[in-house]
Length: 386
Image (cartoon, rainbow, N blue to C red; front, side):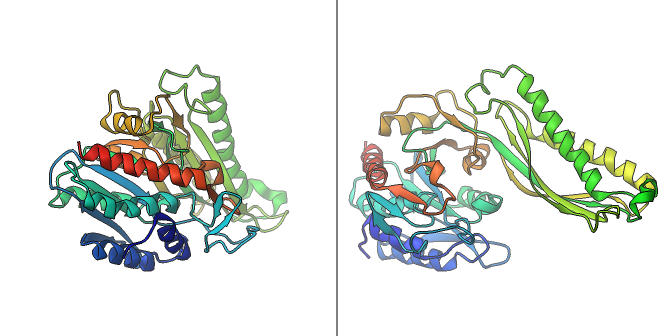
């Protein structure tokens, strides 16, 4: 199956792999494409069986290889004003429009298009392709895939290049993140005797106020050397949605909100989890003292470790050699890079496209970026032949 990078991109985008849906049709295509070139692949199914990650090994079974890491899921298009079909790649004015063209099926297509070129080349170091599911909704697919890769018969690679959109610039660090869905249970009474009830809305507001205080405290501190490159250069706590209450004159029975933490690599995510848990426990006890059924429950819905810059890191040195980019650079958004790094891989971010286009209506990748991504693949294969 001889397909160009653009043809592969067309196929990948045509699969509506929104995180709430199955990605198995896309995985079937990738598996068939690889097999048509004589490359066997390994699926790592989700617990529910409706999704899967897939990885493959190209080249000699020796150490020193490079992993090209991408994800297959995309964010929804509902409620967005698109000028063309989001699941059909449309070329206009030097741009390729479509859901996932930038984040990050463009990189996935380039990695897959490089397979036949790699097979024709005298590789001395292997290339591995690793495509996950559910990156956009908690990064739940990456870690089981990484574990399976490390358990496979192939020698572990030395470097991982995560192809999230970075305009083909080398990103050596990013913030970590974790978040909770928080349910606050109150006790309903008429608001004229609110002292006998518990307002879930007002108690949720206590946690929102705590988040505001934490942000103010963090912003007032002088950032450390590792934190200074981030924007903003400190850990942030954010409440994105909140819903609750029955009527204006009833203490709210229920309130739900979502809270997330973006943690600079120089700080321990576990300590932030502990601080939040302590505040929840304090308020939970206060509510329970008024009514035994009142309280707070929380469910952690994602946890993505940060990516710390590696002094003399193998992946960073490789990416800089391939791109010629020597500028230090970190970002505030999270990727699966932290999961690879905590599993022992040297890891860096470098991929085509602008992160500002990710998740937007009329998402696009510049043709120039797509072509630059292909030159990167050609340079990588040449490097692996030395």
